[in-house]
Amino acid sequence: MLLATVCACLLPACKPTYPTASEALPLTPTISADGKLLAVLDRSGQETPRLRLKWLDRQEPWLELPAPKYTNSIRFGLTGYDLLLTHARPGPKGASQLSRWDASNPSKPSEILYEGARVTFPVEVKPGQVLVRMCDAPVGDEACKGNSSIWWALVENGKATTVPGTRYQLYSQPNMVEGGGFWLEDEYFSQKRGNKEHREITAFALLGGKPPQFDISRFDSKSQVLKCDQKASRCLVKYLTDELVNGSLYLYGFKVFDGTNTCDVPALKGWHDDFSVTPDGRAAVISRSRLSAEPRHVVVLRFVPGQCEPASVESVYFEETHK
Image (tube, rainbow, N blue to C red; front, side, top):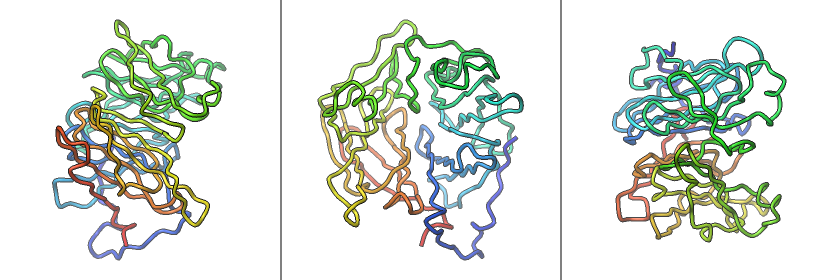
C-alpha cells in the first residue's frame, strides 16, 4: 500500500537548505494526461526510492510517498491519475511486477497488473493495455541475466504477449501511436550502423498494425532523444548544442516539432535526465538542471493548438532545493 505523508522538511517552519553537488540525483518525471498532477521518482532502483507528487492547480506543497522497494520506472496512464510503476518483488533475483496506483487517492492500495522477470518501462497503449520491457523467460532463468531474452510485451488481464521484432530494443518507453511504437536511434546504434551524421528511427508494429514512419531529415548527429504525443504531431527532441560551460561541459537544448513547424526553446538549455509529453500534446515535463552535478528541478511546458512555441514554461522546484 502506498500512503501519502507530507515530508517534514516541506513544512512552513522548516528552513530550506540547498543540497551539495553530490546530492544531485537524476529525476524521472511524469505528468498526468490533463496536465494537472506531477509525479517524480528519484533514487530509482534503490531500496528506498522516493516518489513525490504535486498538484499544479493547487496551492499545496509536494507530497512525499513511500514507493515500493526498488521502484525503477513510472509513467502516468492515458487518462485520469493512474500511475504505472515497475519494481522488484520478493523472490528470485529479477522477480518484478507492474502495478497501477491512483495517485489522486494516495491512501488507496495499488493494484498488481503483472508479475514477471525484469519488468520495466511501462507505457499505456490503450485503456487496460500496457506495454513493458521484460524477460520472456521464467523468473530466475539464466536467460534473464543477459539481454538475449529481453523483449517488449503487451500486458492485459494479467497476461503478457511478446511483441514480435522488439528483441534487443533496450530503450526506455517508446513513443506509441496507432499501430506501433518508435524511438530515435541513439548515438551507439547510429555509429554501429556506420551512420555518424544522422539519427534514424527504430520502429515496430503492434499486432495488426504497421511500423510508424517519421521524417528523419529533421534529425542530425546532435539529436539525442525524441518524445511525442500519441499522434506524433507534437514532439520534443533533445539535442547537443555547440555551447560550452567553463570551456568543457556541453549544453543540451530542446526543439519542438508541431506538425511541419520546428521551433527552439532557449530557456531549456542545460542538463536533462528524462522528459515526456502528454497523450494530447498539450503539456510536457522535463527534469532539468544547469549542470549534471547540480540539483534538479522540474520544468512544465504548456502548448496550444496551432502554435509551435510553448505557451508557457514553468519551473517547479522542490522546496528543499530552491534557493
